[in-house]
Image (cartoon, rainbow over all chains, first blue to last red; front, side, top):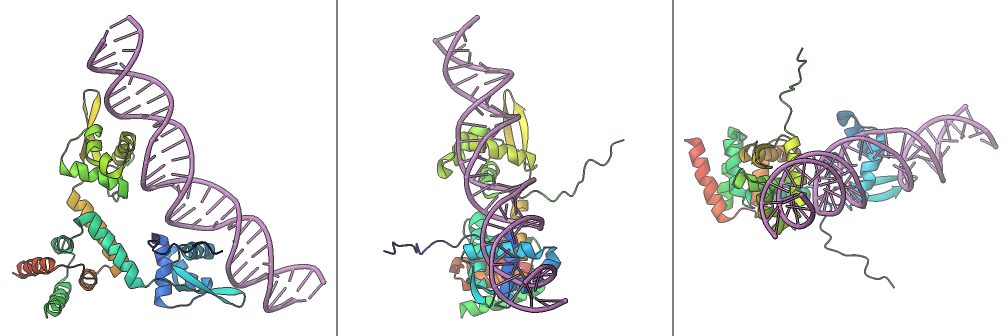
Length: 132
Length: 132
DNA sequence: TATTCATGTTTACAGACGTAGTCGATTACG
DNA sequence: CGTAATCGACTACGTCTGTAAACATGAATA
């Protein structure tokens, strides 16, 4: 009887810090096996393959990555785009810290000398484009 | 013998989401009693006074708020400035998501129509100032 | 075929977090 | 003085995270 199992607009489960590292690997290239993901991240983070496998399955549960069987193993690929992730995360920050307005964030970055002259130039260019 | 107990540059403990709500109250006005903090936040978040008290003590442990005894109760005040908190948090985001460069964050916000014309005007003004 | 290897699945476990109840001391009130 | 209200301290407990070990299973190999 297929009773409505799909609850669509399930706001995407948060992706944790460690999980993000795995996502980054997949966003860079995919599909990958757990092994291959490990090759990308185990070194830098000092993780074991097991850790990566755990993170991958959690990400599958969270619907953030998809699996496709390939012989005895799985190939993993991201199911959400990096841009989307970046979007919700930065929005979260802007909401939490700046009452939802982006200008104060910008002001803060500027003040905190977090903006290099290059950044500033780049942003100016963007602004010009926005106004056209 | 005073064996180096002070470990100074103890990178400031993360402040959680719920804890931040308490901090916001204290940043707005301080010192406050637990009671008063609750008056600010319990309503909106549907918390009990106990919850606030727990959060306050966790914040004290984290060295994020200071206590000053006042008769039988305590007065709480922030020990870290909001600007500092905002600073580390936004830096975290920029690092995690944009490889530490602020321009891409800006670009993203712009693209995601998260920038109102007002924002844009404001940012232009800021830029002008930065360049002077 | 018996063993080893690779791989996904299950279980583990400590620490952080959200949310709050309980306890013990102090104070205020009747 | 006895009792209720207040307040901080301690305890609780389920979930999420970081990090992995143990297990099951099928494939490769000796």
